[in-house]
Image (cartoon, rainbow, N blue to C red; front, side, top):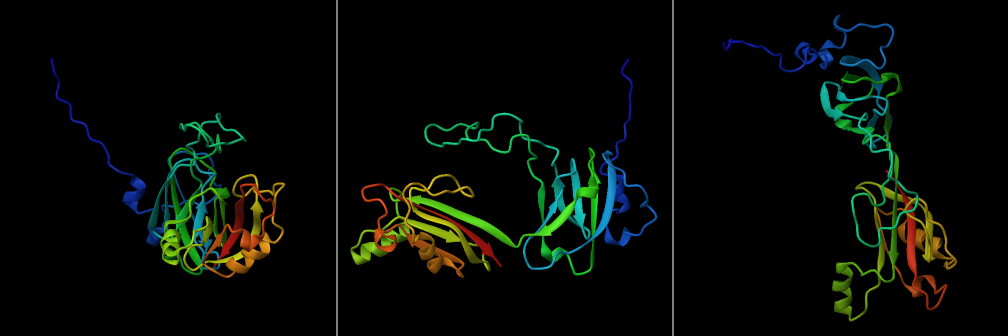
Length: 264
């Protein structure tokens, strides 16, 4: 015999229905204060924070949380999921992209969260106290949440004499009947400027961005030349030219590696 059964399911979260994410309910009796629950699933949290000074982008560090959704002053910044971890094995300190490529090549950050920083638009916050509300689904430690402003960013480039020059360089040199050079091009975000050159070497520098080191071939005037061209600019271009740097090692294929810092 087939029985007729009627089922009823609630759609959404009761906390959303009650408006726990709204600024108007920040002082509601629905909220309890006291000992902060940690590593508890399906729980709502709220706190107040003061906006970091400056005009740089804002980020919430939710690395101590598991999975859920966050609201700032009633605006949802979307879902977070730091509890989703990359596989713990497969990474290597030595990376070489040459040859055939596959998904397991040059893996980094094994065992780390897929994402910990979440953008908060500055237009959503104001001076004084701001409201942060979280709905945590699997458990975390909200006492370790932080918000900060990015005031600088590192950029870098490593170009070889064997690399092709940019397309627009070919267009201009064809008009002048000259041969274009390969170029290092550095660009900050709009409104930011290159404030310092932390590394520069014309020769055979080794390593990768953030970890460059001089090779046995190095033009001593490299950093002075790059600083002269780039400091104070939003973007700059440096040709790989012996006329600009001199030739520190005749007959050897050279490259230009540069690390710079952008600030607002």
